Image (cartoon, rainbow, N blue to C red; front, side):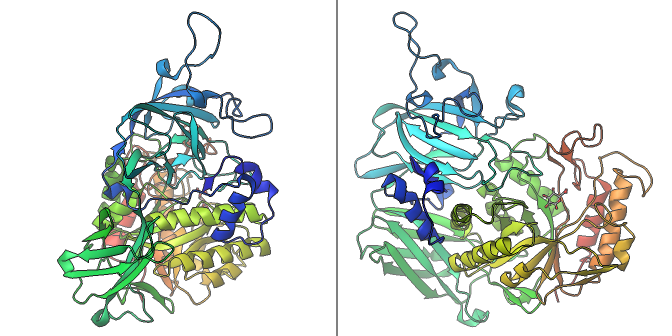
Length: 624
Ligand code: GCB
């Protein structure tokens, strides 16, 4: 979500009448009077960019951001952002110097790079010099894949943007502030958890701070393609005989009537359209004989887009996903989702996942397990994950970090949520692998939360009608052996996600055999269940933290799951052990949530093989 200079107080000051995105933008304008930055470039990983990955100098701010925030909470533009250097002779001036400061690798969290910063959740200042040769007739954006949690960006001492949200990309225009020769960028990243943040302060994962994903400079023509949506038209029914590809190409700052072309040579398709006064060109074209994307055949087509001087080629798959009663249909065929949950943590290396290698290791585990699905908990992961899902045929659940307790009664928090939802959808709407947008995880069942998340689910549907909307629900409390999910949030969902920890946090493993579930008549994905075990810790099935007990709990879960007629997917919690500062049993947890089927250093526990076998035999549930 973009913030503008002066807009943090604005979030509290302004009255919010319309909480939709447009209203949010109005809100952002009201204090600063500035036009909000709306650019969020789609498909950056398919453009030629100048990478700014690598070593960045850094300074650690005194908590809670002494150099970043003024006494009244505004952003200090005259401090470290100036990137001045101390006088060694002569008049005393500054007492910092980026040029001789130590460096951090970008992308990367600071926690796993500098031992002293392991638990640091405050402000770190990053600085990097770069050479540039701006070309006339072009515009350039600094693209930041993700920075956790709030970021403030200056180029050559001018603030170019501010952003809140740790897991989605943003772009800051530098055209007016950079020049030929040597330039510098300073970014202050504040990882402080906020009561009104998303997520809020209490989380069961590690709050890695920093510039955690790729950073690059993207140069585009003056009018350029900033957003597009190319999908198989989702008509009232799936009808491959009359297949059609439709969508839009948005050309920012294009004069109305700019010609846009969309070409898919391998499918023999080409069409063109003209932008309207908003820069939007919609299109649709008949597309018979397409090879549709599916896990068995993850076919991607090269899609060439061009508009005026700008062009871009993306790899896009076409598929239809919909719900029919309690079934999930992929390309008209019932599908059962065999998956696992995953946090964005790098196998073996540890820390935030950001590289091709991290992603290929994770997808290697999923393939080895015979999974066709992954729930990317609890926030959008690196875009490489969706790209890998597209290539490898793994369907994806993508979620925004509405985790448990959020300030559901605050309109400004809703506005932030809509912005994050929009950023998530915008980045990944062209990825065939993404089949589910999740609006939340385990939120308390009360009227303000239900209204908030129902509105958000409807907003997601409005933004993207080609996917299914879900949420991971927690509760009900067992009534004897009866579990009745009557959460009103289910009304707003296409697919119900259900979390439960029978046999671990509640009841006994054997109780699971006797449990009877009742759900609204919709498809259900059992989105979390599990038990903790330390790899290599062995013992009896009633001995906590052993691999044997983890398997025992999961075996009983499988008995229970096989009796839920509308079960259409499972994602055990979790593929890999992950860091969580709330998990503090020495020698067993040591700061890790140990419900992984695989340890953080890549060792497969017995539970992994339980699922590997069950999934290879398609033994967990039925597609219809
Ligand atoms: C949950 C949460 C997840 C936790 C997990 C656990 O219900 O959704 O974020 O990590 O339980 O291990 O307790």
